[in-house]
Length: 271
Image 1 (cartoon, one colour):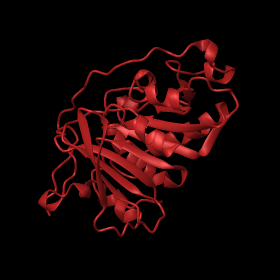
Image 2: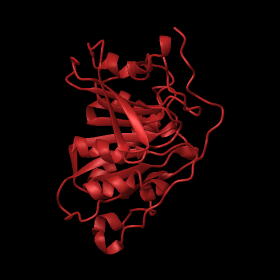
Image 3: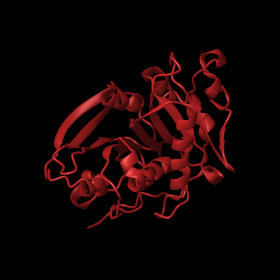
Image 4: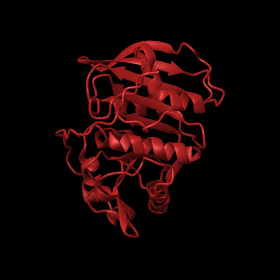
């Protein structure tokens, strides 16, 4: 099998859109202790948080923990229209851990970034009431690979993995728990190439999760859909999995970026 390498030597740093910061008056006392650009401290490390608009201060919150891309940090995620722009309107608490050296160590299972991310969830649960049945984990680029790593190690705590333009280096990892997966990738991505199998098989990109969920569908359900008129996705769905979970792969023909409305659409469907 000829597998295309999906790790490029260069990283494209794209310009990102921003949204206005949430007013302090809309936040609870717990959230003003650390929110938006003010980091929540866990020992020598930190994360950022954003509560959704109009939250009543007591209803348990679904959570989206998003791992930033290479060279970034949590404050950017707090202002990102394609991430925070979705969570703030859908009633979801957004958590953005800060990677050491503005990166993530996802290459091997023994990374310290997994227990750190786990501590982020536990720390957030002390500050805000969270709905543990609705913990979604996402990431972009290197952050997507880190989200894969976390889901692979702590899948029993994850409702769904929402991964964008990045996978683990190998599709032969041994993951602890089955997980619902929604992954989006572009066939022209040259930063973290989409893993492609023999004869241009794009479904190889999620082989790890198909195997871990014991998906027996040799021919996944296929459909085309659009979040916006200018970008279409070919969706491959495996829902006959012995784990009771599903694996969804959205493929587009462009490069390395967070598709507009993709996170929002996934959260709307999941919630």
